[in-house]
Length: 410
Image (spheres, rainbow, N blue to C red):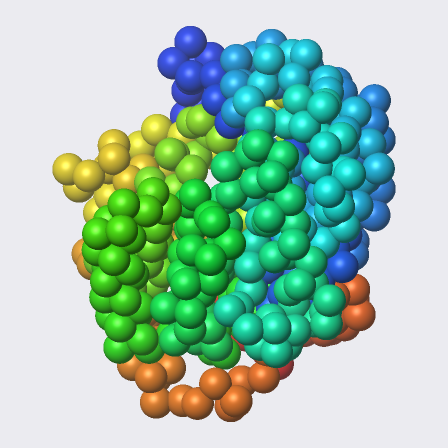
């Protein structure tokens, strides 16, 4: 869809003007024992079965480090499913990366924590679903996961790591925020990220069921601030980061520090993405099996597509914030409008900003049970792919005039 307000030139920044990547996210697998309905993995994750093997990942790490990347995150899916994780950590340490493991904690044991520490892992972040095991079971689809997460959080701290916990907040657990913080305090956490759900992947599919009301957000942030005061009065050093959903903001974020600016994701099958949600877009992305990371970062159409400002709609090009927010999130613009070139609707100046105001107002009038959660699992993934193909008459990608949500909810 050609938008007359968008500069359609094929401008490509020179390699000299493009900074090297600083952050590499290694998505080792899309396999996961949990079924979280807010997962940011692609809906069609079952399509990508051919995971990179150990040697291919070693090559990725070496290439990225040679380019200048210094931070490395191992994620998934659940990265602990990979039996070569310790070997990958060891190689990353040898290369000089600062390494982070982003995990559900399922599959972790005290022995494996020790093995990862011995291999040189620098940091572990464990996710929690809820304050009580009953709700955690509903959200994760596992009866045992909650207890294991708590035990492994303690094991991580016992191994000498800071205890860093992440909680994805949404309509079903946000009213537990006081209990969640109390649980983290009791566990001895050093840092807690209270990250309100952002709507990509499975979270976008389940948006109606997950989106909190504005009143819930206000209460949750007030409770977080109350806890900050309580912790400070006790001399307790536990940082609390409260992340507001983009939909409730008035200005877009500088997504990933700007498209192709500092962040690079390598997906399980070797696709190289400017962010972990970029597969939402109707674009082709290069694969490290066929092209070097150097060429992908500096020369590929995919990574140059939204660099700089020439691609921006006139509205964004004329904005004083253009070099700060970089036009906002391309995935969010596409999912909300069907046009990846559009101004991010989070921006109060966007012609589509009213979409979000309407969504928030409509959602406040609905009960959570009106939109059952669709679990993130292989069966649902395959069913959604079949539905998408049927809706598009055999086409593998949504029409730019029909947003993905309309297709998947039909």
